[in-house]
Image (cartoon, rainbow, N blue to C red; front, side, top):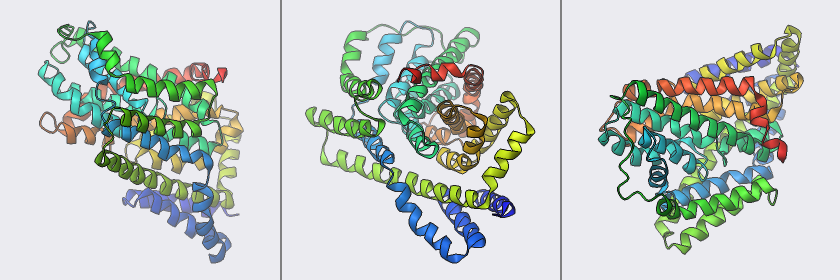
Length: 433
């Protein structure tokens, strides 16, 4: 063991990341070099050759491509197209109805997608032009959608939560259920921001309700029956215990294909696009995961994880002090790294600490995913912001979108504070499983 080698590896990793080396390559290179310095070239080759299979062969991870396929088929086949109209029809009498409808439409899209980028892109194309035409400030409209997109990784199925569950060796289903509470709480917090602006700044968010016009709530909701049916099948079976999170992915993927075929929307180009995006996204996730698994083993060999755990225990940090360190860490990492990279770089160090402190890993998983999603809208590398910029370039600049997300960032911090102050809110629903 050599704690100094572990610290050196972490330092080299962050230097590589600062130089914009891809996260997967940086993790693999540091792990290989560190293991070679500790044990020799032979064991390092063994780590490099054995880890990819041992990681990818994890049965739980098969849910990742399945849920991705469900989301991409649903999106490309147009099963999610009526979500915004349905939300408008139901919420039309509320001040700021368009913005609030877009936020809850993001929540509905998240239930069949699992990706904040896809959620932001899909809703941004539909909602931003309509909000701008209705008098919303372009920066506020785009900020609402960029923030609403983060709900995509909070409400199950969440790819981040699956990967976390595998690394933390905890129940993915329970992390999913805990994410429902935080996802809905986030949607309500964002809606409160919209209502506040309607009250205080009607020049930015018009308070007038939508014209009832042809908006029939019953008819609009019935038009999204494919999404509702898919959610009922997947979540009903998942939360009732009929099948596991892994099996839910397969059921969801098959269900989306059957529904799209029944509606005659699954053409060959649609299926090909869904398959290509699924394969590309899953491959990028798995290669980062392989690097993180190697990095975990390297840190264990160096003794760094035990050293840090002992140091934290010896420092006798209080619960709030530890949480403050974690929140600041993830907020800073979120400013420069994409969520999967930040998650898999930090888990090898943080999980032993939280196990030693006796903190519930299901609650911690939900909190970490929420913190990582805040990073999707923070400068300078807020990926959701750049996605919105691509789909709404005629309305706003990147700077305007970052300005528009500031109120929603404040709401996010409030949600994080509530989750830390009242862990039972997150653990209440998982407790029934």
